[in-house]
Amino acid sequence: MFFDNWRKNKNTGDEAKRRLMLSIVSDRAGCSPEVMEQIKNDFIQVISKYVEIDSEGLEIKVASNEKGPSLTANIPIKNIRKKKED
Amino acid sequence: MGEVIVVTSGKGGVGKTTTTANIGTGLAMLGKSVLMIDMDIGLRNLDVVLGLENRIVYNLVDVIEENCRIGQALIKVKGYDHFYLLASSQSRDKTAVNPDQMKRLTELLKTQFDYIILDCPAGIEQGFKNAIAGADRAVVVTTPEVSAIRDADRIIGLLNANNIKKTELIVNRIKIDMVKKGDMMSADDVVEILAVDLLGIVPDDENIVISTNKGEPLVGNGTKAGKAYENICKRITGEDVPLMNLSKKGLLGNLFKKN
Image (cartoon, rainbow over all chains, first blue to last red):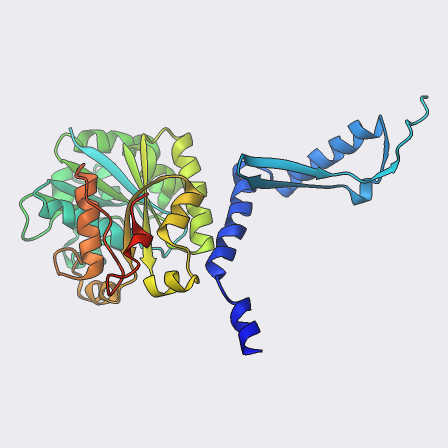
């Protein structure tokens, strides 16, 4: 048990670094929660033209990897068939 | 023609004023002519950190409003030929000065000094804008904590946007024992996150409290933090000085290898 606790608190410096990287990337990209909401709504509009998506389940976030910051979107599809054209 | 250096951080309480006092004194000890200006109008502190609080007659706002000649407001620091403080006003606020006025003042003073060190107030509002208006280069002070680093990143972005040519970082209050245990970010971690050149590392040192109590800077008194500031001053003048080994027994010194 002692060992578990010790492990849990190990390398909090690394945790700080990881958390900072994430918040700084979104700060730098200027992605305020409002902007993210707008991007999300625009995504829904555009993609809904082609497939039926679960707009409630749509998730977007800014993350960073070795190549630099990236915008990741997870868009659940409800119905893969092309929507009937009006 | 001298150089105007702004010491800034975004977050308060990370050691801007202590850094300004020690960089100013360290450069004066190297024989440079130096002027320090306290830009924190309404919350002045640089005078008290330097033990000059009883010698203020005129201040920055008096100079800007032309209530006195510039020379009358410069407080000479004893023991040096060309080392002065221009104190801030305690009774006014940041709106008493604007960036254009500061730019004109620093342009004028640059002809008289090798270095002008500006102690910037916390925040990114008018006080910050006044402090960076005439600056040629910036020293960003941070501690290895998430809040201070995040604010430093924002400040670095604003300095770039305002065309400050050179921005360098001081990582203050490093606790080497905590870094070794993995419970504090190292200076390398901070540099990696902020992607800016490192000017120096200052260890957390109780002597800072003692020297501030006495109103005396740390440089020249043989403490580790004092030595760190002396190295920083040499780097400011362009000398290539390796980062000091903060490890008590000299083990794991490679943690702080430069780059």
